[in-house]
Image (cartoon, rainbow, N blue to C red; front, side, top):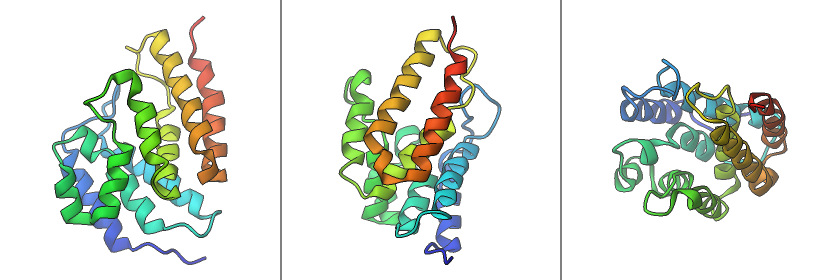
Length: 182
């Protein structure tokens, strides 16, 4: 099996993400936020071991950069200048639009993701796989159930992009039910 991604572009995107997310932590933990984007990228790379025909370069760079527009001061223009339009548009689709109602942000993002290549869909699947971990202690029962419902929505909307990631997401969804409070 031959990879169709460059270690040099991985390092470039990784360093960019590290600088952009400097000082941020994974919610509810003391872990640097870079752990999250690295785990999302690992999920995508792992899927490539079993699925061929994907633009691995696009997916890996977008996985590493997927939160820089949404969660940092990085602009779309800066991202486009550094990584090109395809990467920038993929990351933009993966970012919630703060100008619309919070309750509509995920649906809007999924709509925009579905206009992108399947590799961007894969990043969103991997992102939710990574996020379906024990919820922070400050989350309410309603927030946990809402997050579960969002995971189902993501699975249903994007599962055709990757059988491997869809199966992993389904397993994580089933495990996540253990966090429901009676």
